[in-house]
Image (cartoon, rainbow, N blue to C red; front, side):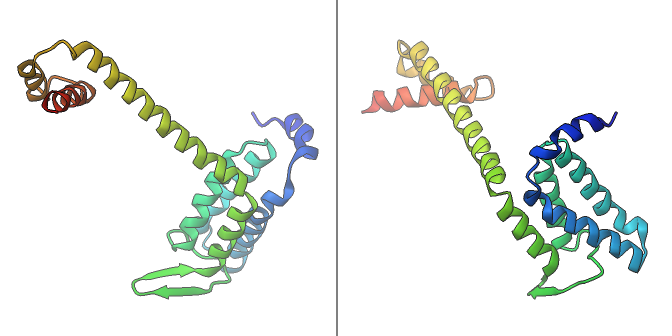
Length: 178
């Protein structure tokens, strides 16, 4: 269920400047529904933005990513435009200016959060690389007593062996040749 007490306790600690673009987008979306109608067509952005507002009120940073995606979809006309629409044409590509401006301001206001997400992704990639390198090192230790022919057999059996084992055998073969 929706926890109003949690929202009430978080209310003072929220950084409202980060959500100003979200609030503006919800107002524009509501105005678009009232002025132009087409409720079903415009509903996905409005509902998505409202969910983002609720996540913001619950102090969940996932709202930033979801709202960024919604604005990108709005910028590229994959979601219908607001009742105010300015377009920019680049060859075969059309960009909706108002959502683009909102997106840029949103990213600027939430720079720390976006940067932390990028850093987490980069850190996860580094961790994966370290794990792979560690596995290769273990295989190299395991294979170091094998002959050149046995190492070639390991590489030849690529459908059976893991890519780390094959890499380790290849590394050892290169050392044999040098």
